[in-house]
Amino acid sequence: MLLNITHITNYTYSESVPLNPHSIYLYPLPRKHAKLLNFDLQVTPTPVDVQQRFSIENNPYYLAWFIGEHASLSIEVSLQLAITPFNPFSFVIDPDFMKSYSAGTNFQNLYKPEEMKLLSPSLTLEEGLNFGDFVTKLHKEHPDPINFLVAITESIHSQWKHIIREEENLWSPDKTFLANEGSCRDLSWMLMQMLRKVGLGTKFVSGYAFNPELDEGNDLHAWVEVYLPGAGWVGIDPSLGLLTDEHYIPLASSAIPQFTLPVSGTYGGTASSEMHTEVVISEV
Image (cartoon, rainbow, N blue to C red; front, top):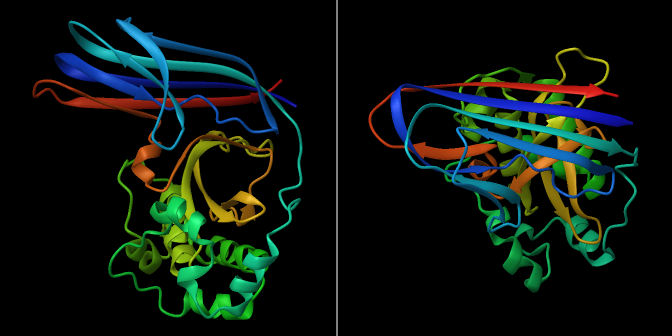
């Protein structure tokens, strides 16, 4: 399957402003199931320069910087991918981790010491979380980590309503839990904290999810990756209640959600701004 993706982001300002450097996280992360055939980035006004860099978590991004003052900023990405189907359950988990997890007695030491050093940001919990017995009950019922991940992801999908929120802010996990609804970002952040409660390292992922059966299924999406020794980072989507497959194209992943924003940057002065985005995904 070939996919063409066009992603347009337009900013308009109430008056001309000096643009500070902008970071653009719209280059697909390398995945065996998604071979990048073409990639084109157009930025208007023309920057002084645009260079590809890598973030502290090794996410590729483009850094653009400008001179002068401008009343608008447009960022357009066009890319083509060759997509190959794959089985998201095709992996083997490290036996030692399986024993530690199945014992269910020490959530603080599921991973080896050397892994814990690298996973520390992915295990950090928000303060004051209260999920009741929702997580612990599922954990006790499913001593196998894969069964637990499937169960908790399906439970969120069935018990929390997926809504579209235009606001860029991220709801707190507690707010999403009590509201029984949330955007894909909100549900993912809540699931990340739930999994960290039982000692599993998680990351927030921003990218594209292509659903060929839905006209409105083409959009920037968010999901979760959980670290399972032996298997590595495994993608799960609480919005749809499944493990991620070839229909998911990640752009950035981070232990901290705000580090996955598709575009980040500031401008000088006191002008107000508006942002409009459009994503079009089509199968060739």
